[in-house]
Image (cartoon, rainbow, N blue to C red; front, side, top):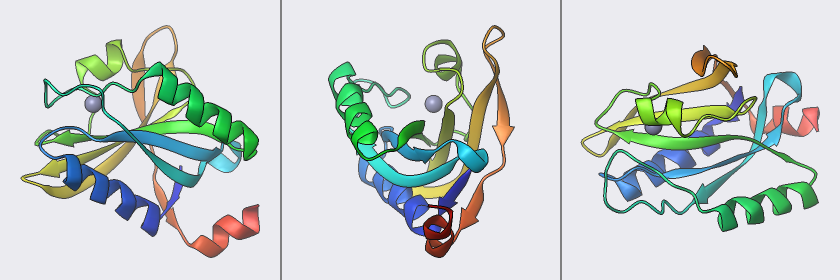
Length: 147
Ligand SMILES: [Zn+2]
């Protein structure tokens, strides 16, 4: 999956802002070319009780889906942070948060500082097993050329 440095920084800023709670949001873009992020859209985490969960409301999901449609983009994935936990899918991510085809970007944030980021995708819908996806940092210019 391809993302720009600025978009990644936007995710890191969101993760810092919500720490020690998880941040979450949408990745809008194109599936073509191995997944190209064109816009990072923060979402509101409806879960305020636990520091290891995120919940996006159906209303917000629908709104963003419609806006993506209007802009000629797809919701190609979701991002969330793992406060003081590695950027690997948790059991909850696997059992509740996994949808086929889309990318799951997870940023690990340790004591308020973003550490590292991994991208995951369901390897097989039936197995509910995630496989790692390479994350490539691209220039803004490359986004324009591909468009
Ligand atoms: Zn998670």
